[in-house]
Image: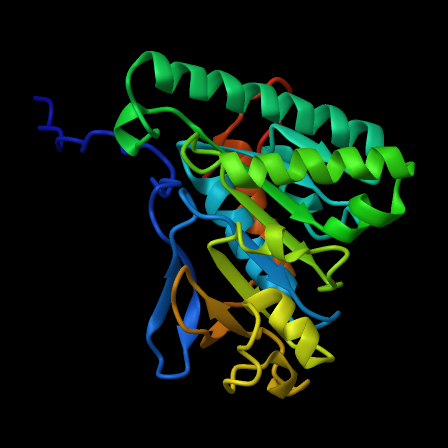
Length: 286
């Protein structure tokens, strides 16, 4: 007589079930309270001197967007090494190639125009989670490389124009922008561009002027100055939200091993959902 079999539970889809419309965890404040950033409808500017910890926040944002089931990513990284681990889960990865950067930005602008045309035709003002339209998250590390170093002066001007358009109009089209630079100067981030970013993170800076370029005029005189962040505290920054007061936070840290693991999982989870799917992680039989 056959023994009765134990009922097996229904299979559970593999994945964290993250959404781009969920707030992204950033770290903790000075009182130990968790800090979250709603990336879907916001633009995030990250700036500060080298080794101040900017890459921690960049990678946290990249991890959230790459693991979100309702998001696609477009990555710009002239150095290759900051966002490089996430290349296999991105729809497009742009390195130190100005022609590629401009073509990609033009394509993003076309997609944005098409999305706004759809919203207008349907009497809508913005996309929401219920629309099941995938957010397109563009992440830039390092803005200054494309704005002042690569290509000709005409190409740099076009890059800034296209970049500004994406930052200004991407919000309602579910096309958030995250941008980082280690040169918080007025030629890289003019006030008119800075003010388009609803969230701004100022890591350690060398001058109060640089701190104010990120956070906004007058904050250094009010006691919120990134020059006061000690060099021994990488990952600490002042984070300001729209209409708020700067908040001192400690950004969560991902080790290189953490990033590699998360990036490999994100690439595997997206296999078949991209033009050039990743082969996926190696699976060892039990």
